[in-house]
Image (cartoon, rainbow, N blue to C red; front, top):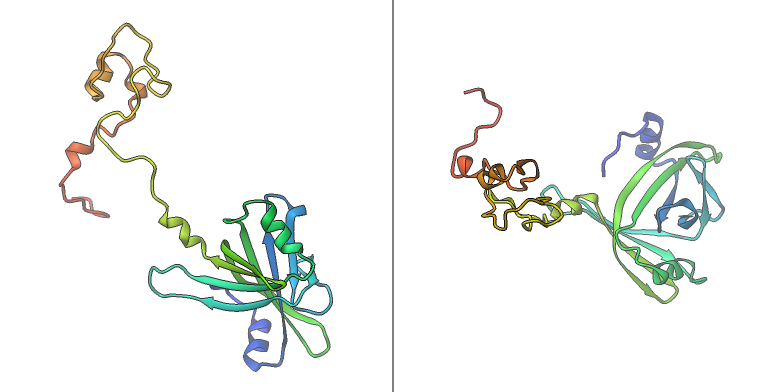
Length: 209
């Protein structure tokens, strides 16, 4: 995940003069009462106005690739009070969104700036010895989902079924668009009737001829 850093923040990081604070937001559920926010700071810290509780979190690894591989991130969260593990064991939170942020502080304690560090989806976790290891993957993992419906020239709906909607006197259908027209039911045709015409044809993108 790449970000355009504020100039002051960027300069402070390059000069290695800033104190870096990391915060993690775990969105276990759709609404904020079930979102957990922790920081590696030893006192509560505020990112974008939201309070992050001290917990000694650690960004164990961030893996980024230049090819089509899916980026990954591992976050270690101390959990001696079982606060995180109790959430994970109480429901199915795989697929939940997780966000990591960082802030840079001057030696005086004044905040120089903050920005996003990582955004991803909870893919797996491990609970062991008073800590929780969260394995995150980037949202590019969503591109790997497969369609539940195949593209066909014939209609996929069951004849006289809910999607078909035909309620006439005919008792048969060969699933073709022509038959749907004969039955005055072409508005509910579920196939791609132009598919045979474009099959095996060379498709030119961006041209006019």
